[in-house]
Image (cartoon, rainbow, N blue to C red; front, side):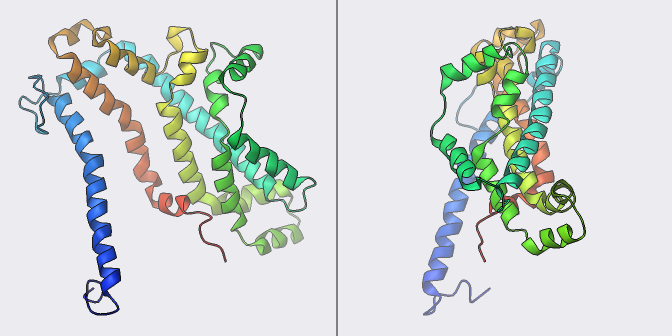
Length: 288
């Protein structure tokens, strides 16, 4: 430890680098935590002061009680849960299948398909063609119009492909000698060895589905199928959409409380994925 923080010749540059790193990370941490603490403070402050303080002057959970007892938010919340769970499951299935196909070195036209997939990372159809496609396949006003367009992300598939390529080929060869089919190798060898990648990319998809609202605006006109984020957006624009009981609370207090409530599901899920997350996000970084 003393050598790590020593300013002796040979250690000086590394020690300065570590000190700068720590200071920079503390600064970034403050930038991330202070806004959350400020929102938390304002969501608890029923006095409506909203100053620079991060300690509420008149703390109360009345705003949270109002949100959790507002039945108009229950259905959008369940719709968000449904689209997040179903969408993440479909997205992981498509991503792993696509990545597994791309690592098959003996597949005819493999380079062509890889090039075509990479091409879509830069060029895509755009908003109007996508809307016309969704309309022509009659997905307007269905939740599939929200789930399917987000179900395949090329960048995530490339990350998954890189992770699969790190699995020793000798495992595949041994499984083939034992008579395993490609699908059995995929289910019994590739997926169990890819838990960090599945957890990381699954979390990426889950957060994207949970926070998404643009496709609801574009493809859903039936207000009974709006998700929690759309209702939250309406809440931010007009806090009077809440129940009559909310009239006694300052509108901004309820808005801040709603923002924190919308953050809860990802914050609850993250600790279960955290042990895989660091390994997962650095997948493909080490080449031997």
